[in-house]
Image (tube, rainbow, N blue to C red):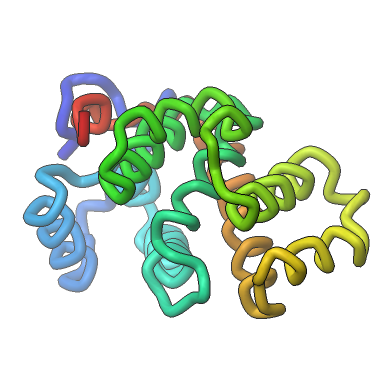
Length: 191
């Protein structure tokens, strides 16, 4: 199932032989829309319950209704993944930033250092919060939330910023724990 000859992870966990029709349909949709099945899905496919939990949460965070644009959510994914040095997520979500922004340089700047990307004040406030939540979660105080409100974010938006940053911290750690490899296709997307 892996789109390249490289292993998906360093663990010897084969996809379950009896993936249900919903999962098969989801993989078919990925193949149709992306031209591949993301390796993160294949990594979770050894246990369909874990795969469904991951996919449901991911799809809600990244594609569901939010005051944050899809690009902003991808920017959070990249800023958090940059702090955590997550190769998988930097390749995958850096490609998404390139695609959604139409700006290949922005994707690269985000991967290296979002502070050098010439972002507006709103986006900087959002990413500064996500990075602080990643690096110093015990240091988040009301002043940090108020800075987001002052930048134009609602309390619901603040929830979404926190949830997206938190999800990618978890994902980054799983990718590191398993040595998850990005699909080769990500490297050529939107260049």
